[in-house]
Length: 161
Image (cartoon, rainbow, N blue to C red; front, side, top):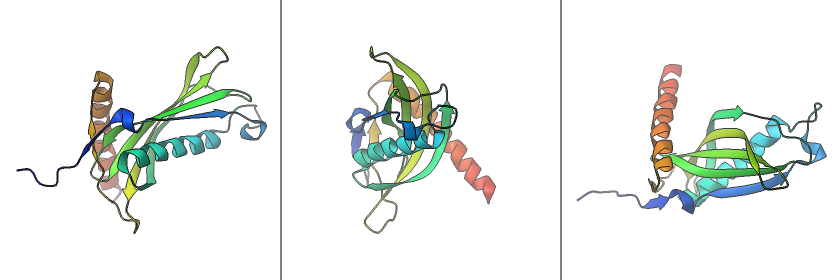
């Protein structure tokens, strides 16, 4: 009999979507959305996604990958979608895709980010998170890529010491 079996949750159970309109205070001197503002929105979406999956408070451990593919401008509608791609014992990797949505509903990808968060108990200590039930080929591909990213992060941590 297997001990310490973690419950499984589906990717779709914690999927998070946030909508923003780029306002004047969100743009830099070139009329584009501040990268730092977008990072703030990404961090919030990732945290909500991870909280939904883990059922705990979370803290951001790293932003593993943040790729700006296109600019966003004042008055653009931004759609951020977060979903769990990989889980460790106490950590979760969340992919946040950011789109500019035109008035006709067309979405263009402007950013992809992978954020690693750790679930915390009431004493702010890491706590185990549920496993991930993969239901689609895309979820399986993301999981396999997440395994590789996890190993790369682990290797970088070991090299630092």
